[in-house]
Structure formats: structure tokens, C-alpha cells
Length: 269
Image (tube, rainbow, N blue to C red; front, side, top):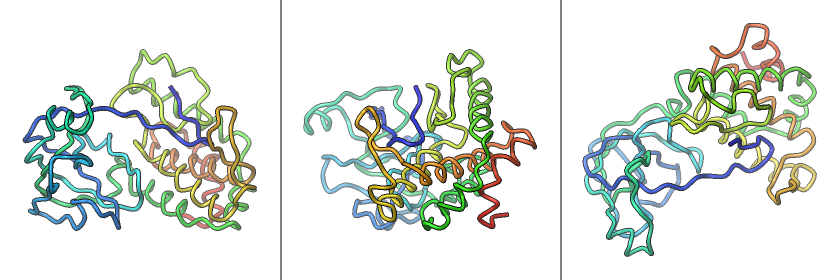
């Protein structure tokens, strides 16, 4: 159900619908080498053949996962969708009509959208947290850790519970402990800021590997990777800030103060 904030998040794999004519959202990593590199309005982008990797067009913006960062966001229309024969030629797989995206051989780029939109209605503020996470220094990690409030994790968990109940009043996860949650629930939206929490984790883990080495990263009891020490505290501080800024409807004024204390200590307004 949950993905934990100090562990590397997993990714569920689903096939696409195989239907042509679908309009949706195309995420293009900067510096990538695929056919979508250099996307621009009106451009037709297509694979050289019908084999993997296909071009992924998400039906809803909530399902966009920026596996590589940074990148750009585009509105696009599927011109030629991969079909079951294409899947069979690539070793198998089955098209599912309920999948939230279409794998395409060719798409028409319609327009560019602000990248912050993948994080929801308050995505501009979440993007500020993302940008801090990708360039965090060791001294900033220590500063964030030193200003973390003891009750912040409880406020973060409470916000998750409120969002889950708002998304699904019958949620069986609303009463769970969400102090380390990055994704939850089974609806189209998996978090109050979509893929924002998982991206912040990924960027912080990358910085920890670069700056902290073995002292910043360790193995959890399931063989995965987790942040340690001040890096774990700093990660929590940024997740808390992203919640307060990106999902303000689920935190009270007092909780917002607690969640944002480390963030404001960095000099952010």
C-alpha cells in the first residue's frame, strides 16, 4: 500500500490501451536520446520501427512519473499506437483497457505545458522544493535536520489521512501511520502532489550518494536502500514542506508552521 520515504520507491507496471487518437501528456527527460528529444509544437515524433521503447502518452496528468529529472511536459496526440502484435514481437505483454497511458509508435506534439503542472494545482511551490532537493549541499542537509520539529511527522501523516479520506471516504488506509509515505491508495491520484514525493526522494537519494556516500545511505530490512542520519531528517523536512505548500487544504495553520520550519530556515519564503 505505502511506499516509504527513506526507501527507494517501487513502480507498478501496466500495459496500455493500444487505441489510436488518444490525447494526453508526454514527459520528455532533458538530455534524453529517444525520439521525443527536441519536441516542439506541431512536430511528429515517431520510432524508427514498431519495437520498444515506445513513446508513452499519459491519459491524465496525475499519472505522469518523471523517472528522469529534469524534463519538459507536452500535450500530445497519439497518431499510431502500439498494438498487441507489437507486444508479441517484443516478447509478450498484454494490452489492458484500464491502463492510464498509451504506448505509441508515433505522436503529434500539440503544445508545451509548465512542468510544475505534474505536481498539481500548487505545483509551482512544489517545484521550488524539488529544485532545492536536486542541489542540496551537505551544510543545508545539516541545517534542515537541525530545525526539524518533533511533531512534524505526525502533521505529515495527518495530512495524508485527510487526503485519503477526501479522495475515497471508504479508504482502508486512512487510519494508518503515514509518517514515511510517498504513495498510497489505489485511485488515479496516488498522492496529494502526484509524483512529487517520490521525485523528492529520488533526488535526495542521488545527492546522498554523491555527497554523503556510505554514511548517508544504508540497506533496510528488505534489502532496499534507505537514507540515514541527517540525510533522512533532511528528506523528511523537504517532504513536509512539499505537503504544506502543495496540499494546503489538508493542513491547519498551526500544522503549516510546524511543517515549514526547516524549509524557512533555508531562507525560503
